[in-house]
Image 1 (tube, rainbow, N blue to C red):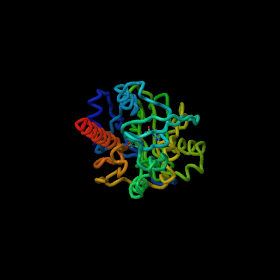
Image 2: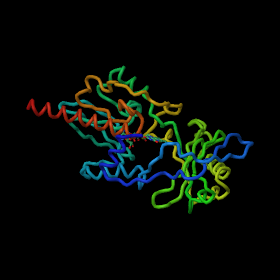
Image 3: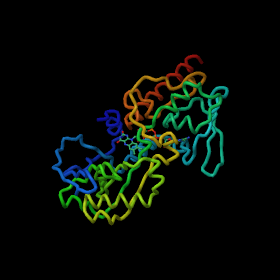
Image 4: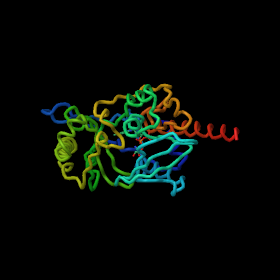
Length: 305
Ligand SMILES: Cc1cc2nc3c(=O)[nH]c(=O)nc-3n(C[C@H](O)[C@H](O)[C@H](O)COP(=O)(O)OP(=O)(O)OC[C@H]3O[C@@H](n4cnc5c(N)ncnc54)[C@H](O)[C@@H]3O)c2cc1C
């Protein structure tokens, strides 16, 4: 479904496997009804997972970069145009800062987050800042719940691990068992970000496990471990504006950087992709475009001595 992603995975030689979808699917329509099972039709697009998780892609890309150039555990908090480049202010979690001057910068993060968390001097033009602010970060308002088990017990009852629910708190569930056989189920929460914050992790975990037990049987209520990841409260993904529903972006040809920054800054967050905004494939596409743009500027400058 996402050729740019498929091509990169192939280029990096990363092994993949199919997400399990063999077996019946379950639909939970109302709290007073027992969940219904339906024969899996196999009509849906097959979901593919990376061995080692999606982070395997990040690790593979990082391998090609000189390690001494990677500054981890730090955030860019300000960018200032200086003679011949951009001065970046980089902050550690403990508040210590350092400065770094680059000829050009690529900001590979959601535009809305860039606008909210990085101070530009001179400031971005009002229309540009507004475009960044109003560009929703797809999926940033969402959260996932994972339950890890000793074995994928649901498969014994010929259940695929796929389920949909109108009861909640999860609305869509899948088998998240890894390539090495570590069994897990995961689901997207249908509860809004504000309500999740009000309920708290303990209450949500309890409700999610109760739901998994209703759908997949009592064994689901005794996982080896659970994990609730809430992107809406992750300051490296979401801003306060992402607590509402984001919706999907309409592909387009926006100009993301205006004068006087155009010469020095390129945006490469997935949202800036003209054809797959918001998706992983969009991040690949946007990064390729930003790299090409910067390389062509470097060549032009070389030609001009
Ligand atoms: C719950 C959920 C489900 C999703 N499901 C799918 C899916 O099924 N298919 C799909 O294609 N996509 C999916 N996505 C979207 C996908 O994750 C994004 O499209 C992709 O991660 C965007 O990549 P990116 O590199 O543009 O930005 P990001 O992945 O957001 O990376 C930005 C990076 O910048 C870092 N950062 C942030 N601020 C700073 C700063 N000031 N200084 C330095 N570093 C900073 C962050 O820590 C992060 O590492 C999903 C997203 C979520 C949250």
